[in-house]
Length: 131
Image (tube, rainbow, N blue to C red; front, top):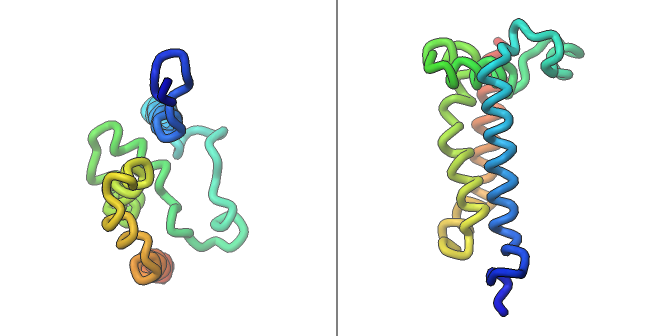
């Protein structure tokens, strides 16, 4: 019997993919029905609470809510950087699950230079949005 045959548990990758899908759908349902700017129980940014400065993710919850309602202008206004990076994040999640099929692409996007560029972009966004 192979690990993926009936009677045996699916591969870890399939379980991770299923878990990510369930979490994404659950988060989507929550953010569709509850507006983070009006809901008192949604988490607040600890960094902004402590410093008064926006972190790179500040506005992401409002962005998700607006995006799920098709309001791209409000999503852009809430966190333009997160909106622009969303396709890249989705691609990285896909690549993490499918890296045996794309080993060179996986290696390239996990190269220290690629990671350094992402960190630089996040840092630059954080500085620019606070000044």
